[in-house]
Length: 368
View 1: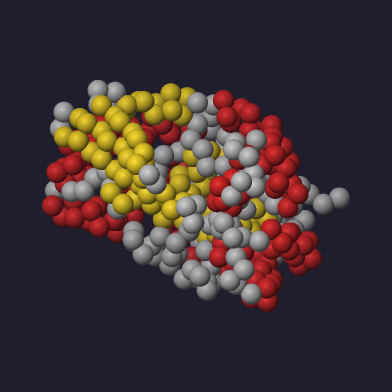
View 2 (view 1 turned 120 degrees about the vertical axis):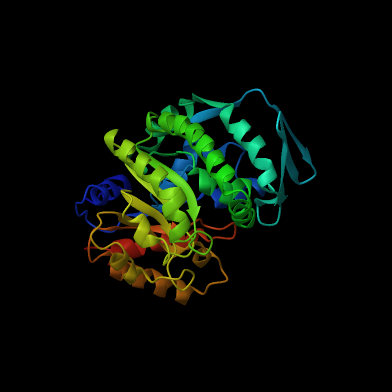
């Protein structure tokens, strides 16, 4: 009797060998496109039918991408509105106003920032005031419903906040503004990050106490933008603190590293995460799957990923898709240190036939 996706993943995370390599994937982006095209109903991703879709595809479920807490901003005037495809948020504080604008791209079913919340060091006092006056409340209702829906299909995962530095890089400022702020006002920048960390710590504690069994710090890292120097100074302390607290709670920890790997994989393997998720291999990424283990030598951290999301699109030939999946499985079946996963999401034009084919190949050539 073959093991379930959940049983396979748990065996690897606990240092044991299942019957074959676990196979998991993130369908959130594809589901967003299916809803936008009218092929799936609103609320599909929150329904039990979303889990049934994973079961039909023989694909393990893990990445719902939700935060088990509500954010409550006090002593600031916050306004949010839409203008066409744009989503705007303006926050007025005693130290000035902050405003961001994100544009929805209907052809690709995603959005991106066209105006960041922080533009320069002049915005740091307002940003610090915002986070000093932000509190959080537990919001476990979705998790309490989702956990039983998952069953043997996979793992129940929720998010902590990003590290304060990466929150700025990925969401609120962008790497260019962050570097300029570091140069222009290093002391004020450090003071502001400390305020944000105290705020994030309160939210992280709620996440660790949530019903989720796996907790992710969703850094969205790539060593092209954040290398070892910035990582050691601004990110390692936050990650080390929260991996230890997650472990003390009897839960699994992970982080999201889906960009270039050479500059950060070795460092992240020494933090204490149970696994590093969404690892993108060459030829899309910069490090072949067979090289990952050498970067994690001496560490028990597991590796999760291996199939670039672009390989599920019809622009990649069937022959190349088949070649890559077989070659990745040939490495991963050598030792139970890997979970085969999509890196990082199946795109809007992803083919369900290829998801089904991976499940077949896992059974055919993914046995240890």
